[in-house]
Image (cartoon, rainbow, N blue to C red; front, top):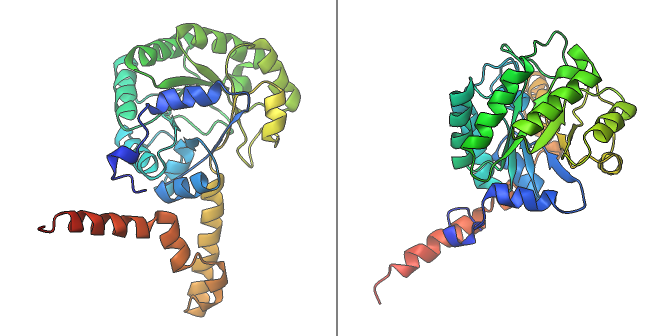
Length: 301
């Protein structure tokens, strides 16, 4: 049913629903959704939670992932994905958009927008994609202060602390940072850019009892692993943050090149979603039926 009908919406908070998923035995699979329509498609494919990537948001706006996004940009994407899918959403909040009080404002704003969880990373601005070189790390205590501020600001929102320390300081220091962040109030840890299955296993072994997130982004430093393999290693969440955007962008690039050459889209029709498929995905019939039912209810008896 359309999100406009209040009685059809979930009554428990998104954070509570995500905690319930994490309490189940299976790893929580979170594909990236870069807009509301992608969120609908992921939900219809059977996914129960989603991830909103800073890299995907930046690229959607035609910008690199260098911390240029503002909180208002992130809120725009968060609201449309939550409205479209009503699924628990983990939102990439970069470095929290400032220091302690700014982080608290970020938490309050994103939780009010419907996010189930936020991710904060321990980089300094200008931050970078975790799979690039020459990242600058924040002092561990400064990051811990942000995590503590976030935990104090939230109601049921989950706080995930991402550490980029593996590439710059080594695995042992990354584990030390992760333990500090858990003590500060992080609900889960996101170790970024682990480079081998053995490294994933070692990090998990060192952080027993702490929910861990594995990033299966393509074309990065981490090897491809299945959700089942990661679950066996003890990971509780797996994300594919930019996959939907990569596929969509590749298809659009092909369309524009072909259209520029041929002057018609006829050659691309077989690759397009049909009008009927589009309307079915967004639930046009349900919206029209809702509109009709409201109009009929106001007719004089």
